[in-house]
Length: 171
Image (cartoon, rainbow, N blue to C red):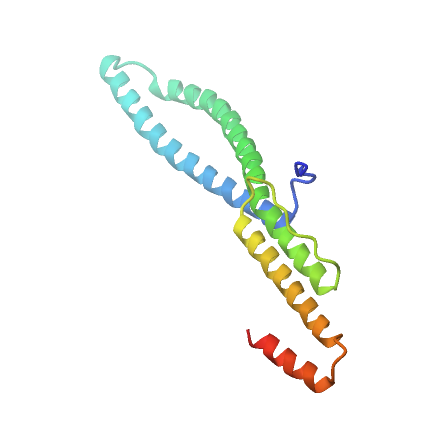
């Protein structure tokens, strides 16, 4: 059996972009919270120590210069983290959204009386057991339907067909 290749990374754009936005929001919030707390305590400690060692030192001007330099560097790091997180979220969600899309597509095709093609997922995809359960269920239903058709097509009376079908569907 050939390897299944990913053709599109954004299968269900609203879901994947929504999760990306949520992840980006949590990352931003975490970085800002931890960064702000760390920065506040570190800077206040440094300022206190400088004022103790050098009482005539202009701490306000020095802090403003440090802030300007740090803001540029942190903005670049922050943007990089968001981009990397976005790529990882989309790649991970593809393992979730892809199988859901495939299962939904198969069920839609079955409802339109198209032939059943068993659901095959990639090795690392989520919902492997759900896809297997759908495959088993549909195969069993198709077998039952074929057996019922065989009973109906037998050259016996309608009363006998009805009795056989009643017995068949008791199981």
